[in-house]
Amino acid sequence: MDPVRFPLRIDGRGRTAVGSYEQHVEDLLEQLLFTTMGERVNRPDFGGGLLQMIFAPGGDELAAATKFLVEGAVQQWLGDVLLLESVDANQNDGRLTVRVAYRVRRTQERQQVTLERPLS
Image (cartoon, rainbow, N blue to C red):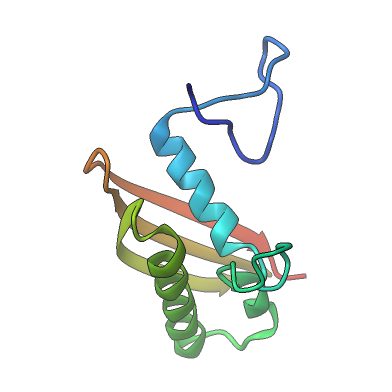
């Protein structure tokens, strides 16, 4: 059975959109990183905390804090699914951009994903 895509959407056939395992891992990573701790019922410690970075000052401090948050969340929640290789974060033009490079453990395939969110 193919994994359901996140966010939930309908494909061209009017059915729930599904994707590959690699897409599923990318979706899991996005869900984790942009979920605020305390947001999930019965999982108050789940989340990557990136949305908390909205009011953080830019620069080296933001990059270091973001890298720390991402590495900790991935190790705790997705460590059995992927192996984190690098994290890069920056604020630019009112957007938080995070680039994450990782290896999918099941397939050993290298992936890189860029995640962006507005800062307002």
